[in-house]
Picture 1 (cartoon, rainbow, N blue to C red):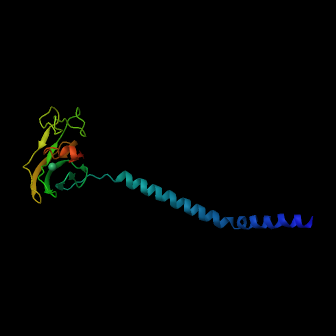
Picture 2 (cartoon, helix red, strand yellow):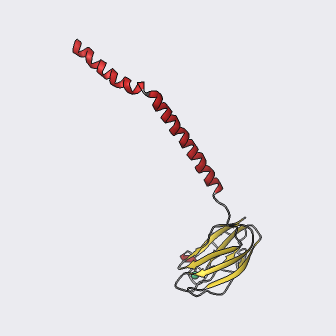
Picture 3 (cartoon, helix red, strand yellow):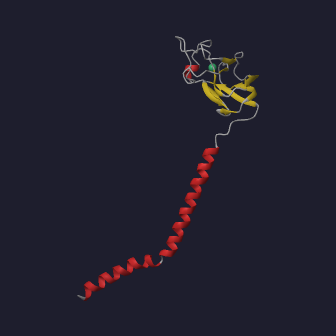
Length: 171
Ligand SMILES: [Cu+2]
């Protein structure tokens, strides 16, 4: 009898000790909880505010094998000066299209070889330039006063199909 009674007493002490210090744990939990809520609110606010449009009138960008690298996929409206550098090992060009709502900007109309039909209805080529040799640059103005969706791409044979395009939102 005495041995059986002693064992539950020891176990009860073991449980009651942490319960006795529970105010400290509660404060720690509340502080941690508040910190988490603050962190989530700050993070959410930063995500909501993050897509700031690139507002500089000078837009530095590069073409490479086989990518178009923009400083941002969001640009403000206005007249821009494109500063294009060919960082690849072969010639590239930079075309800009302003497709209308009947065209999927990610799937511009293609010919049988997989190149964009530049004069297809609705694709609206708005800027063209000479081919750019590797390591060379080209500067030209681009009218982006109309908000909407634009596609920056290279349409040298098979380059579009290899991923040389970026869809850009102007607002
Ligand atoms: Cu190219």
